Image (cartoon, rainbow, N blue to C red; front, side, top):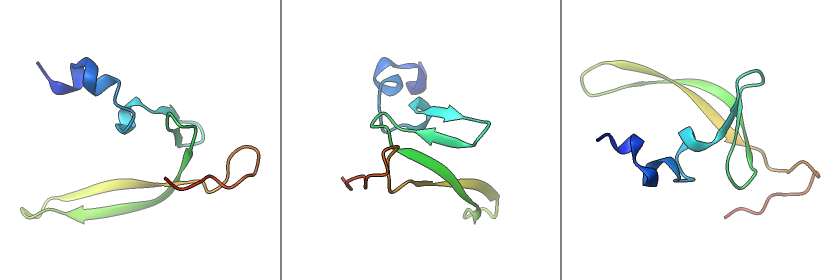
Length: 72
């Protein structure tokens, strides 16, 4: 069985695949309500020379009420 199909994996709040995603505006919302907006494209090369493209997201510093989100 793939670990992605296990209940433990599917309920883990740390996994980005379990967060809410809005493809129209390209952002994620984690279970704590913090919004992660698209920041920049990155490229990494592994030891075999394969180039991988990544999208980097950055957490907002303020919530919907314009109050600072405490860092945990």
